[in-house]
Amino acid sequence: MAEALKGGEKRWEDRSWTSSDGLKLHFRDYPGSSDKPPVLCLPGLTRNARDFEALAQRLAGEWRVVCPDMRGRGDSDYARDPMTYTPAHYVADVEALLAAEGITRFVAIGTSLGGLMTMMLAAVNPERIAAAVINDVGPEIEPAGLARIREYVGQGRSYETWVHAARALQETNRDIYPAWELPDWLRMAKRCMVIGTGGRIVFDYDMNIAEPFEAEQGPAPEPAVMWGMYEAVARRPLLVLRGAHSDILSAEVAARMKVRGASTELVTVPGVGHAPTLDEDEAVAAIARLLARAA
Image 1 (cartoon, helix red, strand yellow):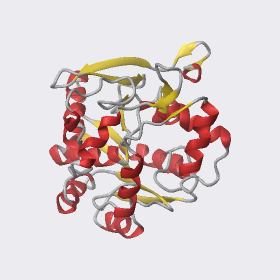
Image 2 (cartoon, helix red, strand yellow; image 1 turned 180 degrees about the vertical axis):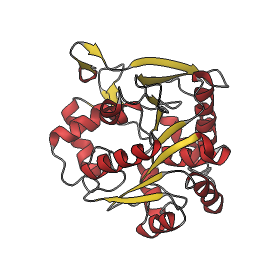
Image 3 (cartoon, rainbow, N blue to C red; image 1 turned 45 degrees about the vertical axis):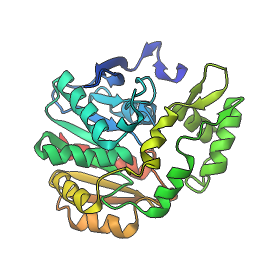
């Protein structure tokens, strides 16, 4: 991708690891200081490593930034069994990545599904997490937002041009990013879509990730279990981000997360829904504060 180049040099290394069931999984590895824990960026349900490109470019050099494509997304293999598209399997894949890279301590930044994965990783061993960002998700998920996600996930739409793709995203997501203009939607389209084999623009994930939803295996364990997992990560320096108009993380649940986390900062990002891109001024400043606590 042309936007990955600066001064003629690629800004990350494309690398891979292998899952326990033999999938070749891809991650972007942005170089940084070995004196600090690497930053592990975990994307949302239908997203991939490209979502974190701007964040990684801001941090790279000072911090190593590791951005995986989860199974069925981006440049990672699609799962042979669609019923392995579950948070438990994604977390197992991340554990395999950490083991392969010898990473024993890290900063986790998780958006939506990635935030749930961060809580699940903390439940296993919170001490290895130097700090964490949970972006617009919590131990309890709003039913309206979950229903909205179920409506679009796995819908194999395609588009003739990037502008058509951007306009389609704008049509369905304008309430989430009401201030965005066409260049913003084009940028999003190129993060979450690719040119398919027929030359049309398609979403960059396996449509079969919808199958666990149809089987009602859900996006995460029950809320009571998730609150216990949240309290594990909340013992570490923690930033909870919430889009002011989020239909996934309610203001009430976010406030409870703040109360139940002694080291938790809660920041509401104005003017956006689910989920903040992490490029908003408020998010950039809050992440910088968190990283200062993790260094």
